[in-house]
Amino acid sequence: MSTAMVSLEGVVKHREQGGSRFELEVPAFSVTAGEMVAVVGASGCGKSTLLDLLAMVMEPTEADRFQFKPRRDTPSIDVRVLWNRSREAELAGLRRDYLGYVLQTGGLLPFVSVRDNIRLPGRIRGRAGAAH
Image 1 (cartoon, rainbow, N blue to C red):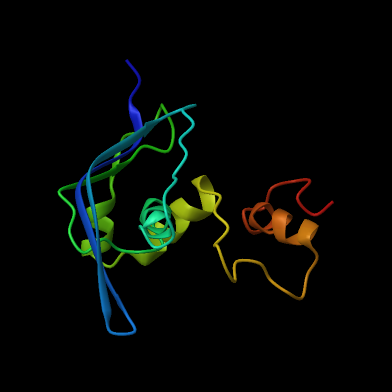
Image 2: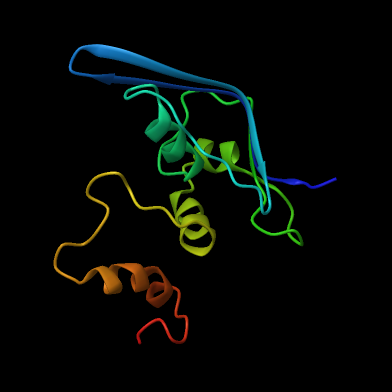
C-alpha cells in the first residue's frame, strides 16, 4: 500500500472578496507518489484555492489533518504545526525543495525569459546545470 504524499482531512478555507464570502470545504483528499490528479470544475468553485492550499502558499482556516511526505524515505510533516507556529521559513523550504507551482496569474517574472523563469527554482537551490 502506498503512503500518501499529501493528505488532507477536514480542511476549510474562508475567503472574502468584493463583499462576497466563499468557503471551500475539503472533507478528505490524498495523493500518492506517481498518482495523477486533475482538478476540474466551474469557474469560482475553488480549484485555485485548493491548489494554493496544496502548494502551501495559503493557510487553511481550519484543518483536522494536513500531512506532507516529500519522499518515501522521510517522515510525514504536519503542515498545520508549521502554520500554527508561524514557521514560514520551513514552509518556504518545503515549497522550494519539493513543489513546482506556477500561479494562475502573476507567477512569472516579466523581466526574464520564459526559459529563465523555468530554471530559476533550480538556480535558487544551487543545482548544477540550472544556469545553462
